[in-house]
Image (cartoon, rainbow, N blue to C red):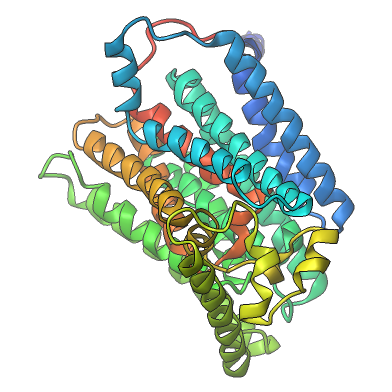
Length: 453
């Protein structure tokens, strides 16, 4: 009799779990916008992971296809503002106005830029990257508003972070610790991807109530931190440090002054634990394998970067207001830096990391002038101001915790972009726009209706 009751209870529990799983996927499939975004989040990094150019091209084409799908869905679901008040409310929300103005400025930079067909082609490629990011931003900000959808996005980002960190550690095990982890075709691209997503599993490890899911998120955070160490990208390390400081500082906004001491210690010690574990593994393997920072190599890298920064400065001074034109820096930089390939060689193929300024801010200033870089800075500042202001009044829950992770990720991006050329490539820059849009989705009011379009 007791055995029969146990079997019945087990079958009931299994049926309940199956029903929850079916409901989870039904809710996901009903939202076409969410399906496309989730597909982008998972598919693009996996396609871009191999180092060969063929897979990089496939990842680029997949991103273009999914951006086109987002554009179609946005057009079908667009609601024209009924009055002036709605228009003003839209433009005054976070970085919306700055995003639209930056997109327009980028388009005008191509239209009124150099007439050389090769330069025009490079400008259009850059414009396509910015347009795809803008579409992703608005898709998330205005069509992923229910809490269960935010949970799905968090879970997807945690999953893809775990997959990529696992692939990175597998690469390290197969190749040996003397090489840098080089998924996405280059360690710098891979480090930028891991850096901006790192706060998502970390904040889940800090706030998840389910013990099993919390332990899983903690392990993913540790693996990701360790993998980041082995990319050999100091700017990404600084970006992670800035993210951690943001989580500790901004995370206190709006919380009660009196908290249990155990919870307070947990909030500070967990990020420190992850840094110590990942850093300890890095140092240990560095000493035993010979892998690690090399003084002479660091000096050569810094000298290389300075020459590229000098080239960006000189191009900016030529046309400080409007810049030399979107996408033109890789072609025009060689006479000033003597790095990378000459302009004619770049025109015949495509720009590589060797022709980038290794500073997103300087390259944007060189290509789009004060107007372009000012608008891009306004996007960052507008989002951070709106996010921090909103965090002061938000209650605990998925919206607050995920917004905090997004704010930390954007702060890390702003630091990493000072020396990492990865953000000029679509398969990486899409995650900047994704985190930006996801943060906006968190700080906007909850949707009272089912979002099933």
